[in-house]
Image (cartoon, rainbow, N blue to C red; front, top):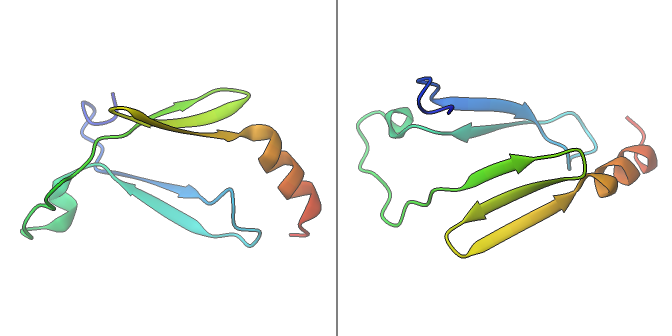
Length: 78
């Protein structure tokens, strides 16, 4: 849906870094402006629920529990 909307990237705040830090997800090869595409590029799908965030591609999936982030946030002073 994001690619269909023509969005080339997403900027978001890191959930793992105790200090405010920013990350970017590049969704378009145009972001590399004329550079050769990476061989072996991968497509990942991100699913977000109230309990977890799951990143999936082909036969691989990585899930991050939201509970863990809540515990880390309360343990780390900001």
